Image (cartoon, rainbow, N blue to C red):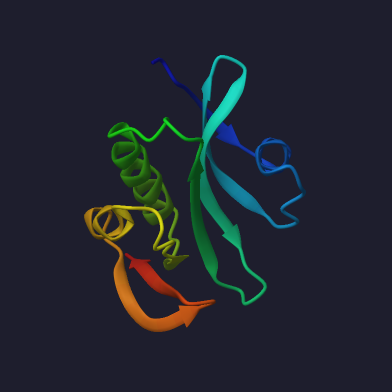
Length: 121
């Protein structure tokens, strides 16, 4: 399977999620042919924090995702981003291990029953 990595903007995110995200967004998308199959990035939350997200279509999770996540976080670090927060989806098997491998640490906070993790420089 060959994936083409492209910048993720609001239009691409709206097409993937089928609704407008309504926030400043920065990220990457992976396409298989014309279809967007993986998206990930950071958006500015109403609370002023940068929130990370990732989603993929069934069957498209790949070990290369770790490499792209780490590269994206390194870019954020070089630009001076202080922290990125994520709310871990417990139904995504392996999500805790993925976050740990990317340098996130668990906080004491929860949102809608999901653990909040933080990545800091």
